[in-house]
Length: 140
Image 1 (tube, rainbow, N blue to C red):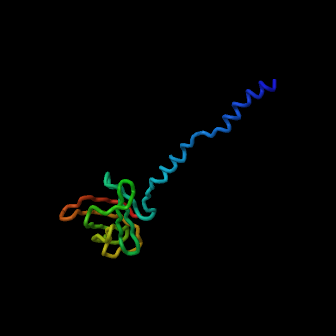
Image 2: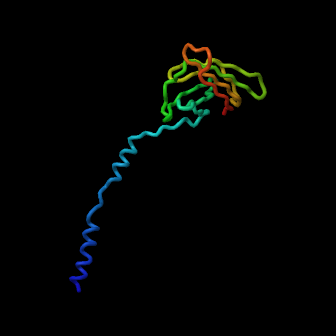
Image 3: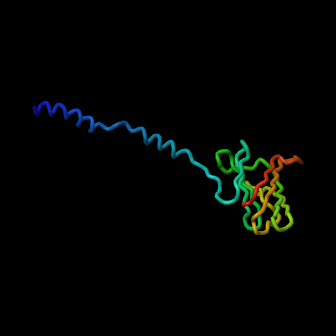
């Protein structure tokens, strides 16, 4: 009887002692290699169709436009300049040209607070008179 009991328990002990193959760490290693990019939490994020994203932020007295690719990784702008028009609820509209400054477009004109307005943003490619892209949105 004890021999029968031992023969029944022996396969269970051997199976429990044999570790299963470890495939999970390889999957985790691959997941660590892919870095996930996020858009900024401040400002207004707008999708540019298949070209990626832009982030428009009124920082201090300047309007800053940052560019991101489809994977939300910071990118070099494919436009040379821009033009923004601000429509306030209680005062006259203001305009601001945007020029390249590194990897962003920045307004040279002062954008006075309160930063609560409708923005009409036009982006221009190098040497073109007509706007390549146009966006209208409420900020913030």
